[in-house]
Amino acid sequence: MGLFLGVWQGTKENRAGYWLRWWDEEGKMLLWGKELTEQEKQRAECLMAQLRAAGIEPED
Image (cartoon, rainbow, N blue to C red; front, side):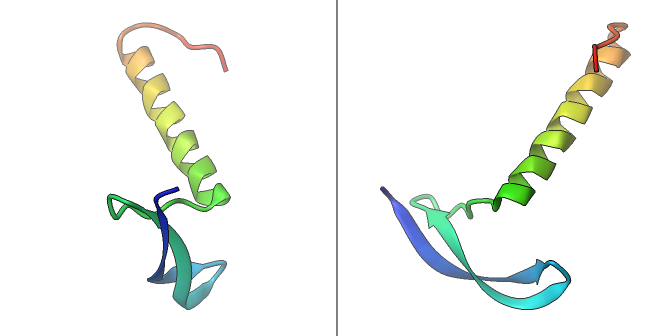
């Protein structure tokens, strides 16, 4: 599968500390579901802003 467990230091749910996280073969940390959702939301907002800047009104 090419996945590895590793330690990440950070804050999750207002608790700072060390967390076990999954990493891929390239050393990229895999996101938790909530992180992935937030990342996709930010990506969608950015794309909508680009469309508006081009004079296109996207549907919500």
